[in-house]
Length: 298
Image 1 (cartoon, rainbow, N blue to C red):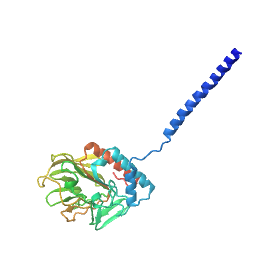
Image 2 (image 1 turned 45 degrees about the vertical axis):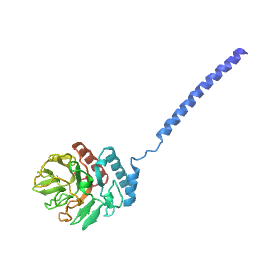
Image 3 (image 1 turned 30 degrees about the vertical axis):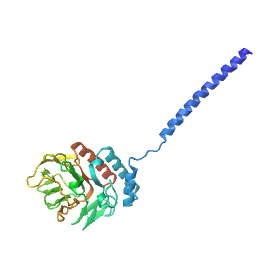
Image 4 (image 1 turned 90 degrees about the vertical axis):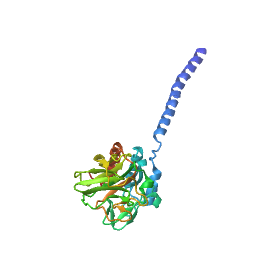
């Protein structure tokens, strides 16, 4: 009987051991399955939601593209270098006026106020004498040694009288001119000027920036590549404009707007200085966004 009893105990132990192992394995699998099944949360749903509510955009693909743009801008570090990001989406003056960073319908949020003749469609906006007031006063928004303007042009149009973005208070200037004659374009911030002297073509993403106190620390980029180096322009006065705000698709010359750009804008940013590494990354992210919308140019 003792042998039989011992055998039964041994049999029970052999039976229970696999069951115990199976239970532990099942529990571990359940934990693993549970962790894999957790929902993936977008990087910044709140910003996207605010922009979508402001613009009343309903297109699912456009929402996905905007979400990707926001995520890339944040992850790659240029989101915080912009006072304003204007994606020019939705095809109307109402949708194209909003700042992606702060999509409130308010001057303090750098929402654009459109004036005059500007035509909008899914590709962006083009002026025939009009302008967009960004309400961004350079002297209070960023610094003389750290600033930028960028403009994504989809029109290869030469016009020596036009300015694509900028302002002046009558003494101090900041402006981006993709073309100003003799195959030349330039960026000006205070006395710091960066110019290119060869015909680079006028479609693509243009970035003018100043990244230091020296007048030579200005640069002009096209599609992430440096095409113009900085130097001092003695005709100008060091300092940023005050009282007057930056215009898009034109130049705010102390309240006078007579230099309308004839180049269609499909994206624009305004903010702090962008170095050469960040310029490459910004272009990659912006170009990816434009490609998703089917409006990229090179």
